[in-house]
Length: 130
Image (cartoon, rainbow, N blue to C red; front, side):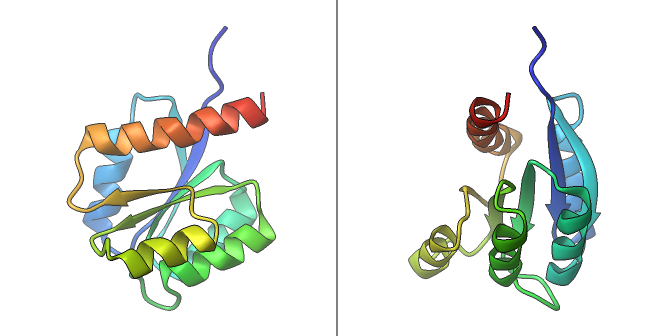
């Protein structure tokens, strides 16, 4: 039986980062169904598309990734949010986890680390929603 594909939204203000993440996920068990280049757009896209996972940059204009995370978890609690950041200080990590983040990808990242993190989150999704 084929595994259910996981829908993903990529939210990052850096066009190159979005492109790199999209390329890493191509051909895997993921469908990138939307992108956002700021925190407010991320909230809007997630509200409209209801993805399984959001890959969310912590530092973005209009709304930070953590502010967007909080809004997303209230509006669509089933959506898993994986924070993508170059700022891995304990305060940022703790604040993200307290607000519902499912995981972290630290920049600079490689494909193996990204896919491993997303696989762990995807397995939880598949167990809860067959």
